[in-house]
Length: 167
Image: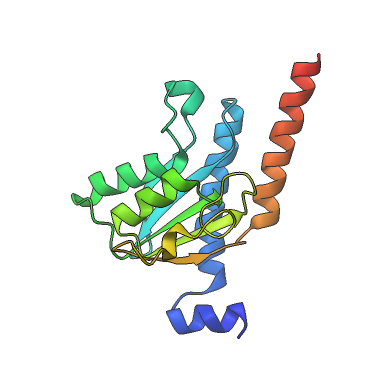
């Protein structure tokens, strides 16, 4: 079955996913401008963004200030409930174990991510927290949406960081 057919069965189109991922990418670029690792995330409910954030670990001096966590918090405040059923989280990099766990706890329906994270991704690369049989909630994962653009943003950020450190 092709990706197009999967999207059609679920009532979504690839262009909708790319549209929301473009918002996450814009947030990731904003993070890079602040010398944060360029990761952006948006939470969407009924076709509307209800949470949006980028990494803020350096700025906030907070190891939990990942884009996903901040966007989930904002979305929960927006709808007035910690349960984010009916919501999709779009994020530029495959979420880590902490963020994947937060998605399970928030009862998200779906996560769409850009590029895989070989050193920390827990939605398919290092583990599959979203589908763990012992957990009380599971959600759908769609990898690779705008993945090349997300990966290039990360590569260029770390190239720039290394060149500054060598100077």
